[in-house]
Image: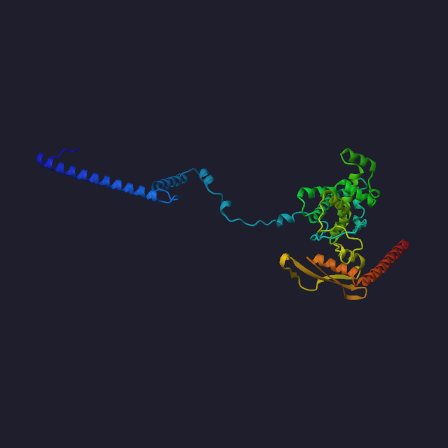
Length: 417
């Protein structure tokens, strides 16, 4: 402390006065500090739970400042690692998969039409074997690769092994559709058990024998093939006939892209119905709301057929004859408990065999396919049944004349050689 140079009396007076001022100032500062601290504590106690105290806010601001300072002075690699990836900040863009899809090889065959399922009933007798419409596929379901198969041939020259791959998938789909709609109250596990009953090799080989498929199989050495199948855990010929049956289903669909699927579905439903009825009796799976089999003496005009359009086309359409299905009035949206469903109205007209836009029938349905089938049913079994039969006879005469003409041309060509 510096010693004053003033006289002792004066210095003593001034020192005493300065000390008093200093003490007063310190007391005032201490009092002010205590009041400020009490005010801060009171404010912190009155703050809401989600609000931070002032000292916490200051600490958070300080930490943030230190973090920013650290980021600015950090090495380049560390700064890059801490920054957000650009893909997380820019908006997402829709991906166009068309270029990738266009790189796939083009399809060699037309895609099959698979309509919405509409419940229908079938006759009790054994259904006729559906015809394979493509001549190139007629023998393919029965031909094994060991029987004169050329791997360098075209895609049309295929064996039952290749067709079985597709037919197996169609078989699963057809069985699933049938069970799902006729046994809607069953759990998925029980539905799977019924489907396994319909698609297993024992069932398929049984159906194959009904149509004599075992006599049409083309294999280089059938006995050796049966032995090999048996050694692999299968039951010899049953495995072969099961594969052939699945291949035949694929050939039906491929040879008729427009109606092949529904033709196969109607055929298999008729084959499966006895087993399903037996299963209903044994396991009490009966569903009275959806019948499977037509009653005795049923009127074909009142029984829905998913193949009606295909059947009528096969009977009378050919050469210059045309069948035209078109709406005869606008569709109607249903109300009440059927809200959201539509009713479609389709009319069927014939041009050919001396007729011009002849109305054959009309039909209604939940969709255009169902309505068109009802129109074809009315044409074949309604008031114009005689017209359809007359056209069918005329088509048979035309086909016979064309066949005779073709044979004559072949004979003439042979004689010239």
